[in-house]
Length: 439
Ligand code: 5AD
Ligand code: SF4
Image 1 (cartoon, helix red, strand yellow):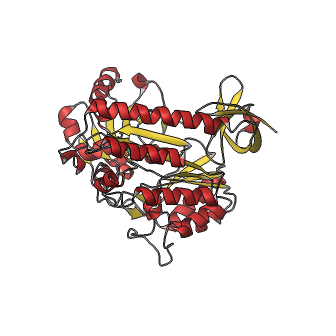
Image 2 (cartoon, rainbow, N blue to C red; image 1 turned 90 degrees about the vertical axis):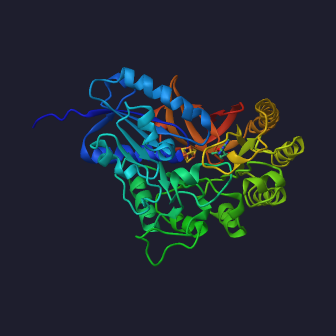
Image 3 (tube, helix red, strand yellow; image 1 turned 180 degrees about the vertical axis):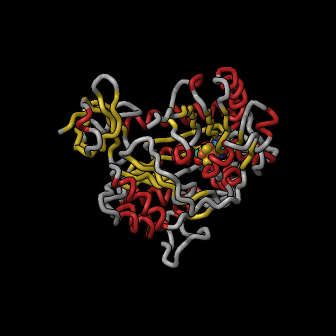
């Protein structure tokens, strides 16, 4: 039999978990037609993919200098594809600005990778394209955990956010497809699933053409269905919207033993006035009430959040309202950003843009106070016992995993712990991670 020489693929993935999963999808699709092997060496790649993010401006401006570098170092005949959210919103402008790019593939069109690969200067960025019933090939970065999409797109109209323009309207994926994907992943060794969607708790509002009669009515019902899958032990999800965290959902979150006690509650701003300008649909009071409810029902849960500072019109008083929420909730993790005006968004047209230096100073204050809180929160973990799912070998005889509440935990150990769930006593703490020993 003739030997098949695999092609080499260099893929850079920026942005969120959705993009990581899209990269897995593209690898799976490519392997349906050809055999690809991943490489970290640009100069030996036959195909170079950049899976882009456009949520803030900086990575977008870096894209074109990066394409220049990739073009210079690419092997003769190698192709360059620009995929993901920036591909969606710039479309053929990518090729006009960088003619060395061979094709442009939008975030909602990843199933078409084999099609664009063979069409010179192809541009597929249709945000109405319905991928919700598409069965992708199988490829995962690790067999131990599965990321599984439950919705595509986003129906919200947060005034700062470009994503509805890059990923299009929200469509829920039929539950049979979701269950089939998770079951397959579990058979291949996954004990944990991460359900993905721009707004996971918007699940069930609109399905694509392939939906059945018996689709779950909402996210809570979907969680119930998924938790019945044999062999699946842990369920995480990313990201819910604070507005749709109703009591039924919080009850399921609190009482379903398969659901990990980690929840992302994106705040964006603590000021009701700014929240209104952002069109978030909740007030400071609503947000605090939902977080208090989570703390009451599940005291051990970790709550993480996203915050934007320097949104147009944000006064010192508005920013103080964000600091108030920080004090009240004491988030276990916070992703914080300076507001970045994005094309196609409402807020980019607002005339009250905040000076960069002011926004920068607020961001520093916010992060400094969060770090103090984190030192206390993480310090209190000393001596506690967590159930850890080990999923990554590290150098120096160490292995890492996640506690049920999402905390990153390291212990000394080797392969035999991979894929195991064990009790770990915490012996050292830091802001970002915990060290411990298996007990
Ligand atoms: N500027 C800054 N941060 C933004 N995010 C989304 N859009 C913007 C923007 N224009 C942040 C939000 C979101 C996270 C993924 O990125 O906090 O939750
Ligand atoms: Fe993900 Fe949003 Fe970035 Fe797109 S723009 S990759 S949806 S974070």
